[in-house]
Image 1 (cartoon, rainbow, N blue to C red):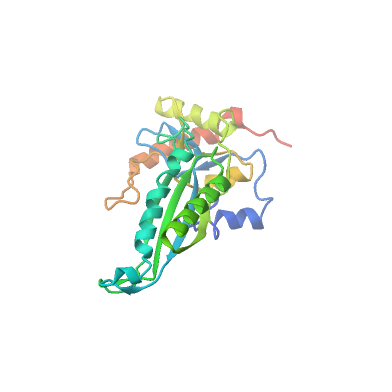
Image 2: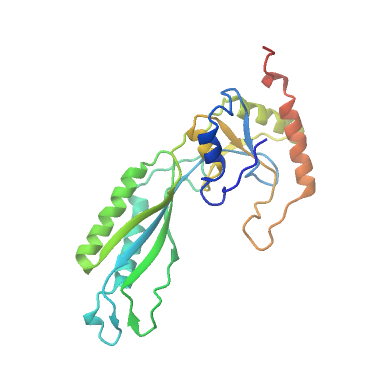
Length: 262
């Protein structure tokens, strides 16, 4: 049983630290199960995750009084032009994967920093963030080059300078094979206890499983819950946890997964 911190940030103080400092903690024949994602019925096993790329984009112009906009170099309009251009990356990287419910690459502008100037001034700096979610097959280095190319075009056309800073990027990881012991054993346990066939799927979010898979450990992500996390009515069901534990008990005592005594 491993309890770690940092999963909502970047795992640097959690499972990533454990894997780096204690590389021999896990054995090749260990079974990895994370109770991080699922559905109300308990038939969904997550075996693949998109790779996130978080980027801070700083557009530097020239501050001036808004009554004389021709004397300024407006980084806000330049940033808006770049945001519009970034939406075209979905067509430039058109990979699709049916394993994911939304099986495309996404490039989403999110947070915007305050310029700390009054309404009647054009700021000298406009900063925003990009959250990209990339399929396992997508080349992240090609994405970085494409973003830089778009930024260079806006620089030339708008007279600004644009700095790109990668705030975080999940490591590349292959999906957990359908015939791995953890997937087959968990599928048997789900069918025996819940009476349903398990479905393997991918997910747009990133869990600790990405880092485990990156290290070569096949991991399954599974749970029984209503996916209420992150909303104002977030809740958990005690009865769902009991059903979940019964599935886990079947998995733990599955004779086909028993390790022979040395």
